[in-house]
Image 1 (spheres, rainbow, N blue to C red):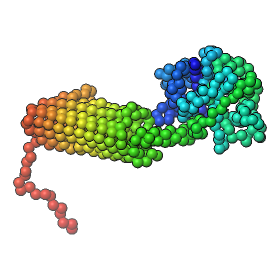
Image 2 (image 1 turned 90 degrees about the vertical axis):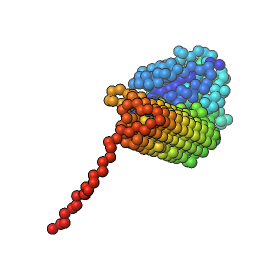
Image 3 (image 1 turned 120 degrees about the horizontal axis):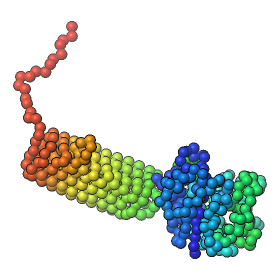
Image 4 (image 1 turned 60 degrees about the vertical axis):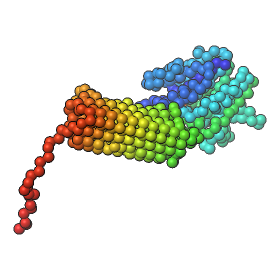
Length: 457
Ligand code: UD1
Ligand code: CA
C-alpha cells in the first residue's frame, strides 16, 4: 500500500500574536510541524506533502531539511481547498492521510489504527469525545450510530451543537474517491470555505461506511492556537517523557520537574535524576549515574558511575567512568574527561582533554589544553589561551601539580611530575620533575609599624 500524507499547515495562527508562523513554535525545542512530520515518518511507503500558506516561506526555509514536498496554498479558502492543492500528486490506488501541522502530540499508533480501517468501502475518521466541543465540527450519527456527516460549529443547529463527539480533522481514505469528492466541494456554508469535512456526507451517499477511531486523549489531538495551549501541550509532552524514562528504569525525584528537549541515544540502569534537570539534544548516559538538581545537560556522553552535582552545565562533552563533576561546574564543547576525573565548583573547561584521575577542584579555567593523568590543578589556576586574536594550547604532563592561582600562558608545556609554585605566571615550558616558581620573593620589613588613628579631640 502506498501512502500519501498531506499535512495542512497554511493557517496563520493570529492568536499566537507572534511574528513567527504558528507551526514553527516549538515543543521541547522542536517545531510543531516537525513533530507531526516525524510521527508520519513511522509509516512505511509514505510520501509527505506539506501545505504552507501565505508568508509561509520561513516555514519552508526553516524546515528545508525535511524530506517532504512543499506546496503553497496562496489563499486560505478552507481545509478542502488546502487538500486540493496536493491532489494532483495522488494516484488512484493511494491511501491518503490528512494530518494537521499544529497538532503535535498525535501518536503513530493512532495513525496505524486509522489506516487499517481504510478501504474502497470505508473512510477512516479520527474523532474525540470532548468536555467542551465548542469550535469543533460535530460528528452526526444516525439511530444505528453510523456516522452520516460532520457539521461545523457555525453551521450546526441546536441539537447538533449538543453533540460531544468532535472531529479531530484527521482522516484517511482512498485516492480515487478523494479526487471525486474534492471536485464536488462547494463553499456554500456559513464561512464560505471549502470544507474537507463535507466529503464525509459524500462518502456516505456513495455507500461507504465511516469507520471511526477515538483518540487516546483530548491532548493527543489538540491543536495549538495560542501560547496557553502551547504551554499546556509542552507539559503533556514532558509528562510523557518522564513516564517513559521511569519505565526504562530511571529514578526521577519529581517527574513534574524534568524537561527532555531531545532524545537519549543510550540510557543505563539506575540513573538517578534530582529536580529541575534539563536534557537537550542527544545524550548518552551510562548506568548508576547521579545527576543533582538544576543541571543542564546537552549532547553529552556520560559513562557509568558518574556523579554530576547540582547546578552544573554540560555541553557537547564526554565524561569518563566514575568521574565527579560540580557542584557549579561548566563543561563547554569539546571537553573530554577520562575516568575518575574530579571537576569541582566554579571550574570551566573548554575544548580540552583531561586524562585519568586528574583533579581540577576549585575556581579554574582550562581551555585548549591537554591535561595528563593524575594531574592536580590548584584553586584559581587558569590557562591563558587567548591573546585577543589567536588561541594557543597548554599541555600539562602526567602527575604535574599546578599551584593555586597560577597562570599558564599558552603556548606552553608543563613537564611530567613538574610542580608549579602557587601564584606563578608561567610563560615558558617547564622541565619534568622540577619545581618552577615565578613569583616575586617575599620581603619582611623589620620594625615597620601600622599607622595608628589619632585620638579624637
Ligand atoms: C477544522 C475542521 C473541524 C475540526 C477542527 C479540529 C473543517 C472544515 N473543519 O476546523 O471539523 O473539528 O478542524 O481542529 O475542516 N488549513 C489550511 N488551509 C486552509 C484552512 C486550514 O492549511 O485554507 C489548516 C490549518 O493550518 C490547520 C488545519 O488546516 O492546521 C485546520 O484549520 P482550522 O482553521 O483550524 O480549522 P477549523 O475551522 O478549526
Ligand atoms: Ca482549529
